[in-house]
Length: 164
Image 1: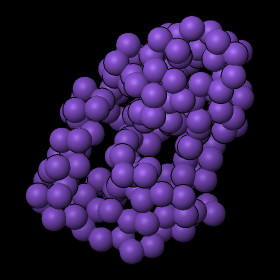
Image 2 (image 1 turned 90 degrees about the horizontal axis):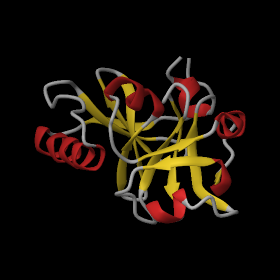
Image 3 (image 1 turned 60 degrees about the vertical axis):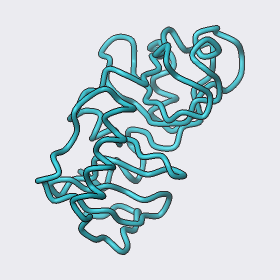
Image 4 (image 1 turned 90 degrees about the vertical axis):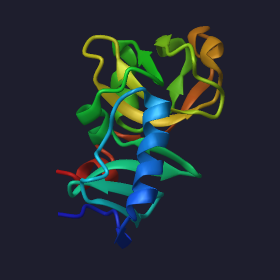
């Protein structure tokens, strides 16, 4: 079942730690996430630490920033920290490419450079990738050439396949 991604040192989080993680995610994404009553585990994986809730990988920790994985985004449907791309960008983003400025049609106005963001397509508003904003919201919406979001997790990558 595990496709290429190695999960190590998986352990149950203390309720206090799970609660602070939950609160950090909720303040960033503006949506309720897992309950601390769910079994919440933290584990090391190949690329970053991952967060399990109810046995599914729903989040990741990149640097020291917690964020939802694509499966977590699908489950909790956050209203914040999104970057919307046109349909022409979808095939590239789902293959793990970084998001280029001209493909962006909309971005959450609260995004700052360096924030974790999620990328969605304009038609279905479905999450395609998770990444780091290389510009603030104004810069993301400006259609300026060059990389705008560095992708760290996308549909079809090893982390996505782990949940299949």
